[in-house]
Image (cartoon, rainbow, N blue to C red; front, top):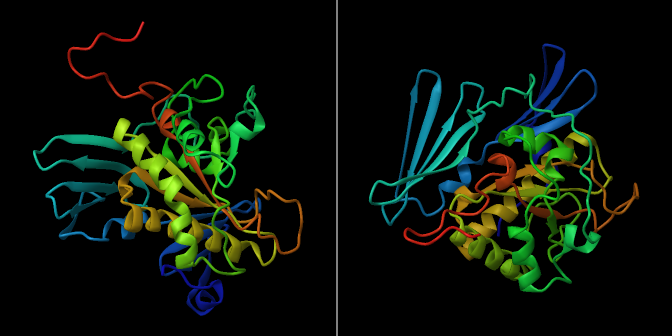
Length: 311
């Protein structure tokens, strides 16, 4: 069983002021509050690749840290992070040495300004609400898979880095999402009980099918809390909920860890507008972010050699 409770972390959290920002450090993530009051959480997802690894090598060259996780079948997942701990690249290398770049965060679009928040208007959504935000409990396996393969709701005009997608709601909202309301969390906990874990089967099947079709596909697992508790606790808690779901999808259902990334949003996006306890708000969401990472290009994998391109 993966998880624990937020109370277990209180005595491990350190608080410091750095350059006007308040930084809360936990053993495996940091929460940053900007002077303007905006807060966000940054985790390290390398832990997810260690599961079942045959060997792990890490070296640092010129400020970049490269971690190579070698799997029992001889394939490798290579993660390169910058001096500040941010993900630069993630690559899968098969046993024959062929490489697929899954995430290239080192690219910066000339139109991107400064940090990682992108100020764009909310997307115009011309599709039924229940197909834009899909209810996993109600949806058929086909609808779940179609949502994971669905194109953006409007034309994507540039590539976004993973951080721009993580921290810019209106960028993320250009892609439909699936509310995984088949699993719920106890207050203050990120544990997914064994009897609920099986309910992720439909999500896992859709993910595996989509990744098989496009080995470069990247899915964001988003974690959310209700409005009970303080902001720092809720950011940490939601990030851990997303991580728990991502770990379970890999460990129990074989979804490749490198095609998943996770991020917590605390209580920022309540589904049920209440300040009280809410099971509906303690949830995770899944979203295909591949078209955002590649600027809407190549959201379909290349056709097999020798086949005519679609007309």
